[in-house]
Length: 176
Image (cartoon, rainbow, N blue to C red; front, side):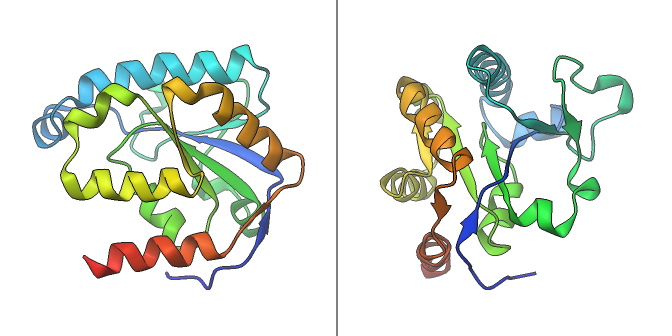
């Protein structure tokens, strides 16, 4: 569903969980095993070490036995109310997650945190998208972790997520 963009005041921060790696996904996306292990380590460390209050969103294909037990607050997209969905900031810590497009087209605020070294795994078009996101303050590299933390803290303190960001990103994606 495509939602009309609106300015959003952030009330919650969510770390988007990823799909468990399997041979099919790994064969489709070169380097995903490396990316996943680095993302798991970095994101947990930066959020937990800096006392960021967030909820871990469990990926729908994750078996109950494989749920990350080292997060205090856990939920899933299906359990969130419409208000919670609309007022959350979604942290996406690895590529290949369709939730990025859900955020863009359902007008759900998001921010990406990626390792600078992953660029070699990405296509030129995806790199162009990342450049746009970075120019809009929606992508941070591991080398910018303090700027990332400052950014999510500002949103947590009442900064408004500007609706025009959604429009600009949609326009880029739809130009092909």
